[in-house]
Image (cartoon, rainbow, N blue to C red; front, side, top):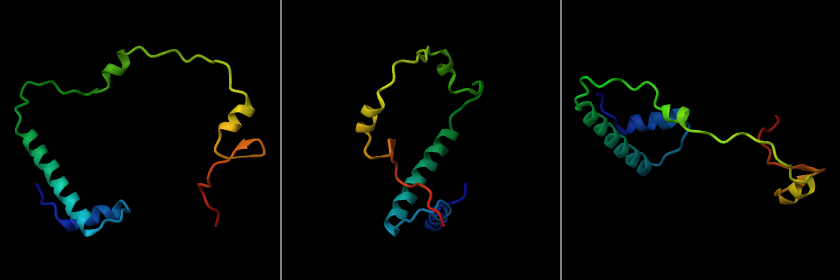
Length: 100
């Protein structure tokens, strides 16, 4: 397994566009080494004869879900009173995409 260095952490942070201080890089490096050492430990486990698990969410298909039922709507005036901001009878949200 290749060694992870602080430069590797810096490269990953750059790819993810995350600013990290030197202290944060040290902490992340330590955490990554701990994770990889745990994975190495798991690689030592004898899995001979263990059938692969292809679907980890099997339990979700067996869990009964509540029916989707329509009910009465909240009056528009009440809804707008609960909104943090409104304009012209509509909920006002912060600008997400800036033009230009």
